[in-house]
Each structure stands twice: as C-alpha cells, then as structure tokens.
Image 1 (cartoon, rainbow, N blue to C red):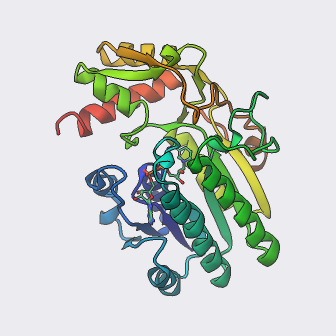
Image 2 (image 1 turned 90 degrees about the vertical axis):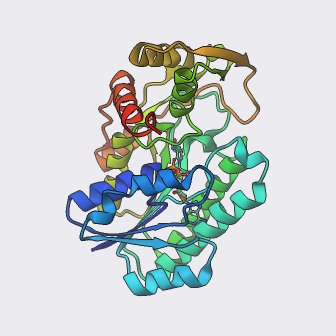
Image 3 (image 1 turned 90 degrees about the horizontal axis):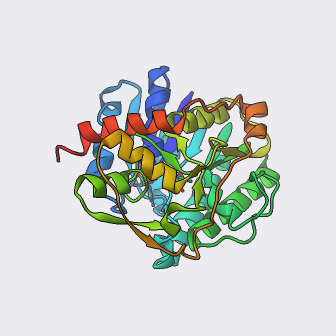
Length: 319
Ligand SMILES: NC(=O)c1ccc[n+]([C@@H]2O[C@H](COP(=O)([O-])OP(=O)(O)OC[C@H]3O[C@@H](n4cnc5c(N)ncnc54)[C@H](O)[C@@H]3O)[C@@H](O)[C@H]2O)c1
C-alpha cells in the first residue's frame, strides 16, 4: 500500500507522514514548501521522515498539472490524504484568487487523478470554519454550512462539495475531516498558541479578540487529529464528513492564562473587537467520528499546551 500525503511537510501533514512511517508504510510526501510561513520550518518538520526507508519527498505544486500527473503515474498511490491548502481565514481576504486556485482548483486536480488512478481511499482536510456563525451547539456534520465567513472557509466548503461529486460520479470513497483548531509541536507560526507564546517570550503585546471573553475555541491536540486522519485512511467509506475536534471549547481568556502558567511569562493583551471572519465559538460534536472511526481525543488542553511549550523551547527558542 502506498500513501500519498499532500501538504506532507506542513504542521498536520508531517505528523500524519511520521505516524504512517512508524507503522512501516510506504509514504509519498507532496509539498511545494510555499512561503505562507517560513519554509525552513517545514524542512525541519520532515527531518526525521527523510531518513526513513519508506519515504519519498516530491516537491510539486497542486496547480502544476504535469507534475501532479507524474506523481500519480510514478507512485500509484493506493490511499490519499489531501491536506495541502492555503490556510487561514484572515489572510484569505487579501488574496481570494490564490485560495481558490489552490484549495478548489488544486483539490479538483487531486480528486480527478485519484479517480483516474483508482485510489481506494481519499481523505480530505476541511475545517470547522465551514460552520460560520452558527448558533446551534455543538456543531454537527449535518448543520448548515452555506454561509462561510471568509474566502478560506468558502474554498474548503467548495472542495467538500466537489469531492461529493467525484464520489457520486465515480464511486471514489471520500472522507472529509473537518479539523477544529489544531495545536501542538510543529504548530503553525500564524496560529495560537505559537503566535501568543512568541510574543510573550519577547515581552511584546498581542491582539486577543474581545479580550478573550466569550470567545471559545475547541482546541484539538495534533496527535488526536492524526489518529482521526489515519483511522479515516484505514476505513474507506462511501462519502462521509467527520468533525475531528476535542468537543471541549476553551474560553480564550483561560487559554492565555494556561499559557502564562505553563511558560512563566506574562501576556500583554491588546483587546480588539472580533473580526467578521471569526465566529464567537467553535465546538465539535464528534459522535459520528467516534462511532465510525473510533475517534476518541485523549489530550486535555493543559497537557497539550505543556507538550507544545516543550517543543517550542527545544525547536524555536534557540533560533
Ligand atoms: N491547523 C489547523 O488548525 C487547521 C484547522 C482546520 C483545517 N486545517 C486544514 O488542515 C490542512 C493542513 O493544515 P496545516 O495547519 O498543517 O497547514 P500547513 O500550512 O502547515 O500545511 C499545509 C501544507 O500544504 C503545502 N501547500 C500549500 N499550497 C500548496 C500547493 N499549491 N501545492 C503543494 N503543497 C502546498 C504547504 O507548503 C504546507 O506545507 C489544510 O488543508 C488546512 O486547511 C487546519
């Protein structure tokens, strides 16, 4: 069995790759090392993987039709986890066409190749952002998702819908996994907790929407997310959508308090109103993922943040 992981040098993707390699699989990691954040960080993410016998790195762009065809023709992947994307709701406002080209056009390209090369299982990363500003809690997969608050969320929703079409036309087994705010070692520098901790250790202020009051995020530790992705790879179904979240939203004010306790640094908070791209709460109902994937997140936010801090001290602080 050969696994193709797009975005395999990124935060979540590199952990998925490592997990599959540890269990002895053949893994093709595809990534274009885009400079959304420092590509050197992605090189470090794959340092261990590149030493493993089952690993192949392909530096290619989803938008490059010829290169992508070559990847499928050469490696004939049996299962695909499509995680490559332009991330981030707020940055997507400045460049919606780029998000559309990568997240929609790129996803269609991978779906089309997957069906032509008879891939047996296709897992695609989506996001809790597709739920927008829904007032119904917790978020269920069947909830309305046609009011995305950012171009990013809209492109992820479009990719979900297109994946359904590929399933319907060609019986491609697709599992869409909607991640809820992922954090942990190798975390993205544009996301919390990295962003906040970086400012705290430098004694600089950072923006916290609403001062963190009445603002909740369902922080999910990366190992728990990876377990869900791998379970979805292992159990191809028809077309299913799964929430992968911790089902335990944390108020942001408490989140920052935990960071202060764990790191010993003081947060200088600059409160700003919540931007239109941000919902006041994310909260996953994970019953479906539990039932069909055996998904059972086990990492409490205190534990996950302590692990993040250990990683940050070892890998980021010395630089
Ligand atoms: N981290 C989160 O909290 C979160 C939440 C919801 C959804 N997601 C989704 O999970 C997936 C992984 O996110 P992440 O946080 O690991 O982000 P990341 O930016 O660390 O990883 C994405 C990877 O995709 C690669 N990539 C981007 N454009 C590409 C292109 N055109 N061709 C080839 N590779 C390309 C990047 O270089 C990067 O390594 C994404 O689909 C993202 O939308 C993440």
